[in-house]
Image (cartoon, rainbow, N blue to C red; front, side, top):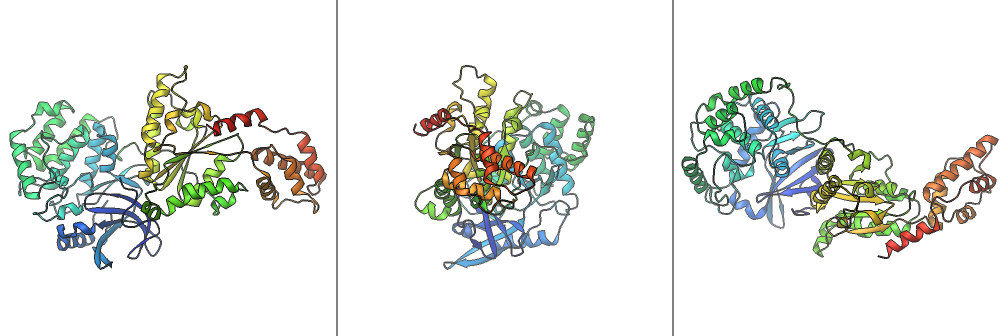
Length: 558
């Protein structure tokens, strides 16, 4: 997957502001954009080099028809538009932005869905299209959208694929949608494509034994499909390997052009009989994200981090600039980092830095701790890991912050690690590899960098190690000013001298000492004075020893 398209973040596509480049296929580039009133939309941009292969007039007519003929659960779509850039026309259309994903994305990740999930999905698709008068549409995974905005997953339909408007003589354009297209004119193609989709969701492949050249021209592909369906037809026994006999009979009849008109009714009857213990008329159930995003309250990003000038410079040059100026960095062959590891003594602000970095980038922020991924079920943690990364991808651009990563991803070389933990590490490694291509940036934090799995620390996973040291003198001064803001203090309170005396203390230690000094002043009902800090310092030792600091420094030099 490409990191960027023709347009980058903050570019304008006609009147739309690009928020994020999502993905592409052989025909279109897809962007998340913002319109002139601030509403999010999805923009489909037809690649200029394939325009001559597209029947633009037919596409425009179809979009207009979709705007006029609305029905429940339809995704709102705009008309075909164009603008000129460098003496070439750029064509595009927009549709509503909804939190979720297309079924094609889910199937790419999951390969296939469960039997019940697949049946309920197709039932919802049928129900959503009951109000649509025309049967001459083709339902594919690319036209079915899983809406995750509410607690229950809803199925929405966008029956528009630019691929459907490829001119018949075109070579080299993807015609995969033709797998769901019936070859007989007198057949209800809407139901035929849904029946094919159901088999695809249950089994993971198409309901016939062949692999045609999908990049061939349209007419030839249709002919190949027809020939293969006739010569290599699957039997009911082939279907029964994957599903109950009743459903196998329903599907093979539909795909063989028998009793297709009764397909919807037969599927409904099967659901009531086979899953009567379930609430089958309810919402489609799918493994959707469960983990919460962390809302940031301030609007100042890294400017809220006291001091740490060198650290902030590193974050700016290695992370912020490459992500915000992707087109410029791409020109020089520089790819944004996939993730970083923040390590150092506890209490030095690693979590806070991660939150403020996410805010600086305007990324969705997910904070994960070991307890969030714990599960008593076998493979339960692996499932939660998968949900985490899917949730982050759906909210992209996003940042996953994994705290205490040493507890989640311990070294598999450790003698006492069991197979269960090893599987969890493997799952994390698989999910985080090149996740920047999906709009996800990873930050891990640890106080024990020596015991995490070394496989994590490689290019394409964690690209850079960043040491978060004890606050230096300047940082301690700024932190004190921040913590003492809006508190009653003596006019002669010497913050500079206090910062000197706090050498060797962590950020958390300093926050604790300020609070103890404030409590002391409160007891006297007076302003915070040097004497209050002196008392707090006498009663509070640094939480990190010199020996511990030496260990971090030694790891830093590896």
